[in-house]
Amino acid sequence: MSERYYNSEIFLARALQAIPLGTQTFSKSKTQYPFGVSPYFIHKGFGSHVWDVDGNEYIDFINGLAAITLGYSDPDVNTAVLQQIEQGVLFSLPHPIEMQVAEKLVEIVPCAEMVRFGKNGSDATSGAIRLARAYTGRDHVAVCGYHGWHDWYISSTTRNRGIPKPVRALTHSFNYNDLDSLHQIFTQYPNEVAAVIMEPMNVVEPKEGFLEDVKQLAHQNGALLIFDENITGFRFANGGAQEYFGVIPDLATFGKGLANGYPVSAVTGKAEIMQLMEEVFFSFTFGGETLSLAAAKATMTKLQQLPVIETLKKQGQKIISGVQQLIEHYKISYILSISGHSCWSFLLFKEVNPYSQLQIKTLFLQEMFARGILTLGTHNMSYTHSDSDVETLLTAYTQVFQILKEIVDNQSLEKYLKCQPLEPLFKIR
View (cartoon, rainbow, N blue to C red):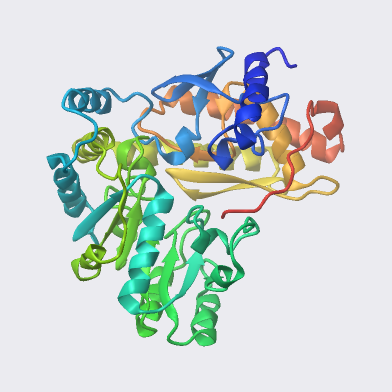
């Protein structure tokens, strides 16, 4: 047992007796956090900081897997939820807040003419795919990025156990910024592709004209274009990456930052297509749960009133610039690089003989956690990340990047690593 993470490790052992992986979310599990050098349970959060069950404080750059945009325990969101809880959480008929939040989405999101709510991002992407199949009368789907746990998508990854082979045969992956790879899918399955669903951006920016060309190619082949904006929505711009890049899809899905961490997601799009939701079965007992909708309404209102997106970009760009300067100063571009958007950027670790990406990343995580930074190698920015937070992060990077250079140049990983390296898993992006 490690002294710093004693309670976390006790809780993990206990949780594993009742919960496979010890948690409900793959990306929060022991598969992502090396044992002996990682926290496993968070007790509370406020602003940009969280505290684990051992009392250790961290600046959080994961932010609930990019669901937290305003910061933990945002006072305006809390107030809206507390006011709503006095009225009730769930009823036998819809509460007016369903309509109000739908109207707010229509107001903000360029493609949104009508809206339906789910609870998770996977609900929304699956609903959009079912809708596209109903609208086009086709079965096949082209995918790019990560789109959730449901059969239609996860069957295209190595995490496809339990999914029937006929389902797997209907989903086809194409490569980002590679229009030919999408064209090949349409060539192989002419008049059979219902939709192209993609994250409009993740690790790298779209090449000039790429998103426009994807939309044109989809429409030329009778398919719908769906943007999965579960992360880019309310992060790249209030209206999502579609507003930011100026490319409007037929349908789009939102979650995560929509309600600053409360469980709600949305399928949005053209009324002509969305109207089919009256026939396509997309129905949840908790789809109209009022606390999450109150949080969504408060979150979107705050996004409209305050420079939230501008702040995410400004603070995130300071990190990107600072990391690039450190990489150049220590001459470690052969070990890692930084990529992505200023509000959602990525450290990319490289294979450097004799060490794998995961061995290097494991040491990185060990050292960052010890310095009070909660990270998985991304910078999921929130409105509460201060200049002090950015300075503390870059100070930690200054120290840890030198360690990475030392272990690679002198092949001394074993001298520093206090745990077993992480094991290879399927890549979601």
